[in-house]
Amino acid sequence: MAGSSSVRVIDQGAENILLQWFEECNDSEVDEDVTANSTMKSIVLKDNKVHHVVQWTNAEGQRKYGDLWKNLDYEEFLQFVGLLTLVGLYKFHNEDITILWNVEYGRPIFNRTMSRSRFTTISQCLRFDNAELPTLQNSYIPYENLTVDEQLLTFRSRCLFKQFIPSKPEKYGIKIWAACGSQTLFIYNCQIYIDKTGDQRERNQGKRVVLDMTKGLETSERNVTTDNFLQASILQEKWKRKI
Image (cartoon, rainbow, N blue to C red; front, side, top):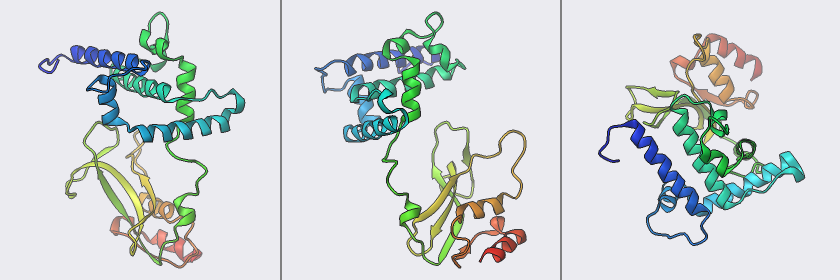
């Protein structure tokens, strides 16, 4: 497989690895040597992190569905992650996700692993943290000086909103707008930049970004520093009315 240039062969190999992975997830005597299961978990998941995800996902499921929620366990979560991987694999071929569970036209591995309704329900309740913990904005009070600017998080894999910024040290990545305290360097607020939606580019983006990033601080008499792109006379007028 390593020496082949055929996408079809590579895809089939990926499915075979995941099939083996599912089998080992259901095997109580899994060999902890280098297997598909242990290899994928070592790359993507850590056991202690998985248990946290399972815990908070179950909490969210119980909050949303009450007694109707069926608790997710460790093995089922690994199967869910495997199906997500396969969904990405087949979505690459422009295959409708719902068809993957179709008895006649779908992929048998999906129905054998879990129902489409169960997969959808887990997706809706998936949590990676405790939703009841207070947010950073409720706990962190920034000092009087803040800076609003762009930041590029290095990322070279496929992504619809990956950006190329020649002036940055790492030229490819995910662009975010961020408001940071100038003394602590903590991020008070941030927002992922996803480029234009449709054929129309956003107008007055600089004004909108600064107002979004400093929401909740309008009457706090703080100093906000931005670059030329984010500055505008109309923005200054808005702040004069509120500060």
